Length: 67
Image 1 (cartoon, rainbow, N blue to C red):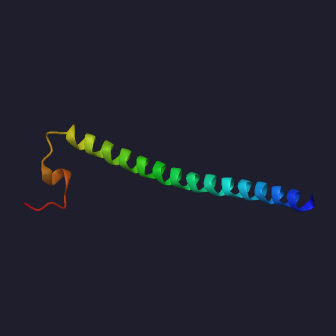
Image 2: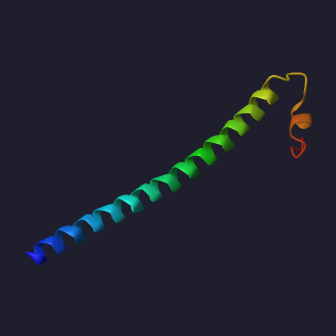
Image 3: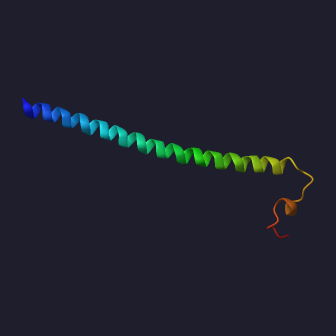
């Protein structure tokens, strides 16, 4: 009887720890996804701002470009 109870307790402990591990792993992935989303949103805003200013030449928008 003691062996069965110990086995059940061990199984519950292993399940709880695995759930915590998986949740932590998903939280880290979500953080990276959120960071990349913010970065691409800023880049998109910069591109939109550049596209909305048609009076500027390519050289004014991108000083590194040599023509």
